[in-house]
Image 1: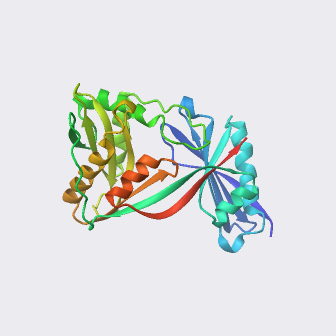
Image 2: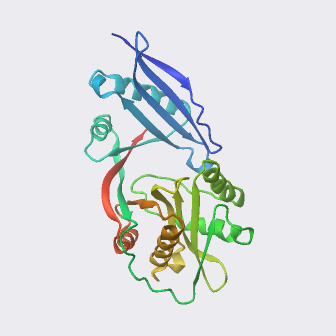
Image 3: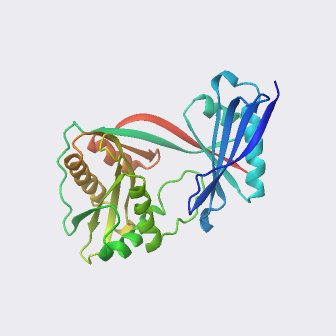
Length: 286
């Protein structure tokens, strides 16, 4: 039977990105695969777009994935995308498909999990700093220094992927927290304050609305001039304790780290995070 590709209107619209979608069907309308292309609206990252492609296992090796990918690549070029990104588990069917179609390895992510029933190691405080925490949107008196601290993510390891500078302002800082709240989830932030009363680093966790299952680390970063003192370890240990206190039914915490980010991987190992899987973020230059 012949395969049709149907462009779809995707309702998953976000202020800083939007998705294009395609459905692959048999002639009788039976779905056999789909593809999504997320376009980035941020000016400094508009050259990047993210691919999600799925073909029903029973329908593979019929060229359906290749046809969907061709449609995505054509659309990407029309929208002036220069690099297409896609994630796949290491050595999976999807990983081999991407490699076959010319996607190079941009970076490898190590996914780890902390069992919240395990004991938390003792972590020393860092002299000259103090910790603060909040839930949801950052308090007004900290919003500017928290926004400024976001630049600590600018030099995070990104493999061979040219990500550009991720620009934050106060409005975006507040909005990011509001989106999580609107989803019904809980955002918790722990930050380190330096002697000048500015944020030197932070770590974020998002917990499901019912407080069960696993929470997810969103970001942990320390500004360059404050690194090497143990702030990330101190902040994350405090956050684990606070999360366990506030959500006694939560099972664990998940995080992902680029394999070349040795300091953060060492911090997570010290806190008891254990490897779960590895994902390759592949890239195709258009």
